[in-house]
View 1 (cartoon, helix red, strand yellow):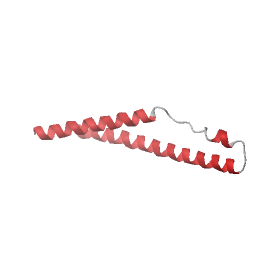
View 2 (view 1 turned 120 degrees about the vertical axis):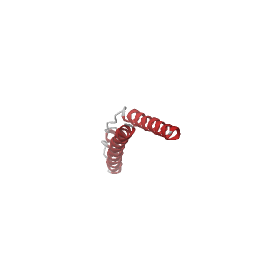
View 3 (view 1 turned 180 degrees about the horizontal axis):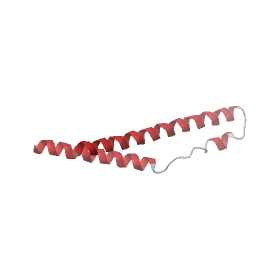
View 4 (view 1 turned 45 degrees about the vertical axis):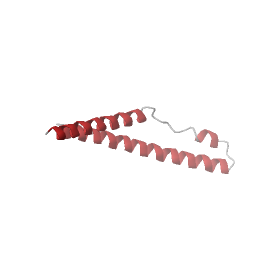
Length: 83
């Protein structure tokens, strides 16, 4: 029971981290393009910096997954101490 819930929480964390890594990579790529455009004197450099679409709920999902995992760890510790 508890191990299934823990595996689900870990899975949610892994997915949240994967999304965060993907987003960080996209942001870095967009920033590099913007810098290159600015160095080249291209006016498109300003618009390239704002082109990254950030999911405003990704942070909330990651926090919820961490809280869920933290609660599960607390429950497991409590069950172990009572056993």
